[in-house]
Image 1 (cartoon, one colour):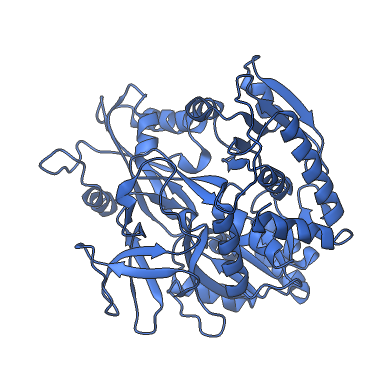
Image 2 (cartoon, rainbow, N blue to C red; image 1 turned 90 degrees about the horizontal axis):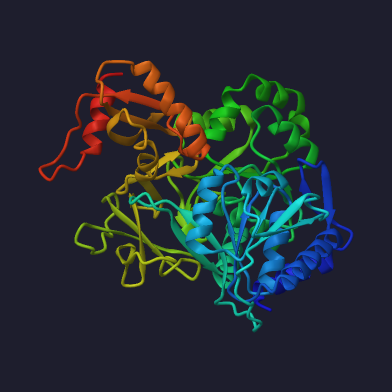
Length: 504
């Protein structure tokens, strides 16, 4: 038993009849007893499959109350949980399995039916928190190891994109997860009277730790929604007594723009008691932040975090938030370094944001030494501190596109779309988008320039729909005759973006 699992076990044992987690999709609250029963059932299933210390289990499910149950049951046995997007195409899922040979996968019946490999066993499982779960097991899995689980053992693997287009796998230990959750709970002043609502996907660090694990550490309650719905948001907040929610700027924009959401707030505002909304991923425009706070009488706190830090690194303090900043470091050492790798301590001087702490990784699951230097993680983000110690994040060294809180690797999208025979050259770039932060734009040099562009554009959208996750799919397609390149032939993406913006 680790300190993390001891804390989680104690919460369920101390609250047998208290409603702790609600699955909004099922319309049902689950007590500590309900959750503990599911943890025990799932742990027995893992034992029956001989899954033990160090086994990696893939989870491909929509948002549901079962996620914390899966984690707790797995962590008891030293199993590592790897959740991925439920919109992952079956071909990509099969490729992921081939690369990592997961001994077991937890999926929906529909995905199990699509798996289509008769060598694998499929075990239907009815839990309180997920009545139709299927466990797919690899017949060639290695026997499980039974040994004491340590705080330094991995508990979660989460994917984060890289400039190469291949997702980086971030391994987070029990200790990192617990430390991050404790910092989140303390800095956000959580108590057992709080109710957090999860609108972000459960395969992200935001939902896994920022909302779920921190709430459990604080003995607070949790409402898990299947997905964000602007028209239902305020009803969900009012009906469940939600006191805070973590979002991305896109959600803030949707709530401001959606007529149904505004009508719902007007109808329900006397029953809404949000303490704050936490926003991260990319900066909110100041006018939008102020408009949200004024219209919905709710404080927005902006912060800065990432998967590699198991959650947040900075957060605006309740008593002195600065609009436009990501706040002050909490539980994390943050410094700005220049191109020479030396610290830039002067206020207002831009450089790369680097971090370290007892919740920050010191290596990826796969070799990536350029991301670390002298014990510091190099985020690839650019920013500066002001004279009061508030961090301002101003951009990225990396080419990653940030769309509505999702991180899109251009090379990964390019690798897929390049299969289309009418594409001679392709570059995927991010263009400014007021609603989503950035649009995913596929820029094409066609084999038949100026001919059938509408048909080719439609073909790209159709191909992306079946071969890419929804958040990776291009939202725009532009055609050009050639790309701006440097002397080595590399596409100058910033210059390309400038040219595209000039032609709008």
